[in-house]
Length: 180
Image 1 (cartoon, rainbow, N blue to C red):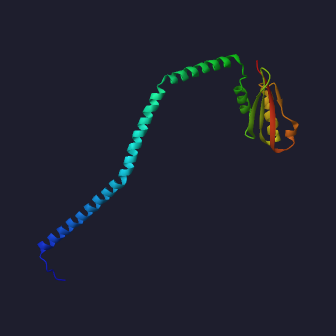
Image 2 (cartoon, helix red, strand yellow; image 1 turned 45 degrees about the vertical axis):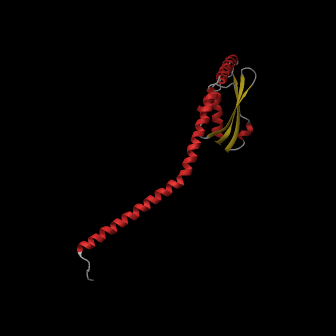
């Protein structure tokens, strides 16, 4: 193909083409930014007014909380706490945590405890009922023997009906506690 245009004119056309291309890209970017601005303005206005509303509400709440009613509530709570401390010091509750620790220390891997109930009896007596499953009869009997040997419990009661099966035994053990 023949080149009919001189070299300097070709370069001038190329630069003009590049300028037009850049101009179109810039116009596209400006239009895109304008459309973003148009679509974001309502959201911005809504959030601006909601922020003002929330700030005014928080100021009202701060004013309301600074009233004397708050100090009255604090005084009432402190009074109730002192009364509860007096009641706790007068009443004697048997301490159960050492007994639970004893039970858990005597439990083997073949014993699974599903239920632990604490029943407070007369004055200083209580009863702990342990429910669960044992893989074997021997494991259950050794668990009961270990509880009896611990001397933590006054009476360890395992109903004979719990020993009817050889494996996967559901059991219920009753432990009597008397505290001084």
